[in-house]
Amino acid sequence: MTWLITGGAGYIGAHVAHAMVAAGERVVVLDDRSTGVVERLPDAVTLVEGSVSDRALLDRVLAGHAVSGVVHLAAKKQVGESVEQPLLYYRENIAGLAVLLEAVVAAGVPRFLFSSSAAVYGVPDVELITEETPCLPINPYGETKLAGEWLVRATGRAHGISTACLRYFNVAGAAAPELADTGVFNIVPMVFDRLTRGEAPRIFGADYPTPDGTCIRDYIHVADLAEAHLAAARKLAVGGGGDLTLNVGRGEGVSVRELIDVILEVSGHAVEPVVEPRRAGDAARAVASDARMVRELGWTARRDVRSMVESAWEGWCLRHPEALPDTRK
Ligand SMILES: NC(=O)c1ccc[n+]([C@@H]2O[C@H](COP(=O)([O-])OP(=O)(O)OC[C@H]3O[C@@H](n4cnc5c(N)ncnc54)[C@H](O)[C@@H]3O)[C@@H](O)[C@H]2O)c1
Image 1 (cartoon, helix red, strand yellow):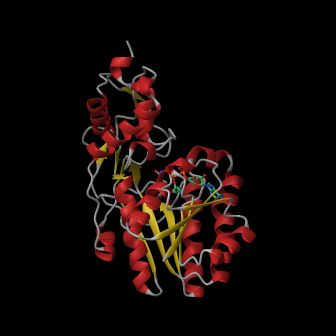
Image 2: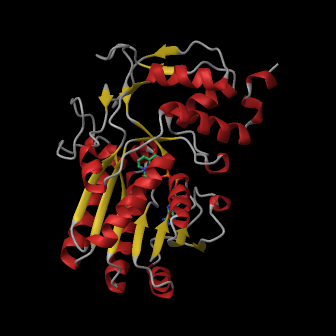
């Protein structure tokens, strides 16, 4: 089988590309390099530079490589930016997806996996978020992921395409240092960034109704997430029709304070975090029920938070050697 991975030069996409190649799949990556790093890609992958909004290019790639499945990761993903530039987010994440799906339908590609996000749920007040928890996104980014799912499922049903929408929870870690996240939008690299500057990590709100007062999240190692894609791709390959909508998390809550403690231990920095006021839009708790994923894919995440932090720190220090505590004299 040949899989087209859009956004394959990105943080998560490159991990998916490595996992698929290691599992013996043929992989073509389409990436416009807006945030991607092509050096992350394994040699066995064919890279096509361009956008998912370029219909003529898509037609050539899908036919030219006899693509039999698409994993669509290419997207804009910054919540704050989506609030400031909703039109950009709807154009990239929805209009771009529509062009891609039109090409997929025209080429008769039978399988489609879509990168969704826990952002589709908004801020639900539940112990465990199941796929039945109402989706009430609170920002344009989350809206585009939810509307993207609608588009994917409706197109799949209308045209006999097997689809999977994977709702990632908090992604962290790296399978190898050079594959690490280069952005500083998620909490782990944000804390690394503060420590590298000699600043204290920040905790936004310590008065939430949680055991230590800080927000609780569900972190998943990006290498586990890549394996989940492979398991879903395999399921679609044997499935023949139907749609899957799955949470991808570990079903285990870790508080911001607990996470920062692990980061300080792993990095060797000894800085007491500072508590700042709550941020708008942060749920006290967002932890996935992984029951449906385990049932449907027969797969479960294996790597713990410490291994996420250790691998992410190794990747961070590769690009920021000054972050190591003993180089800061
Ligand atoms: N990182 C997370 O914590 C997280 C959580 C939930 C969901 N997601 C979703 O996972 C996907 C990948 O996220 P990531 O963290 O790897 O982001 P990333 O920015 O590292 O990767 C996105 C990739 O897509 C490419 N790209 C962007 N727009 C494109 C376009 N129009 N045409 C072709 N390529 C394009 C970029 O160059 C980049 O390589 C996104 O859809 C994101 O919304 C990420």
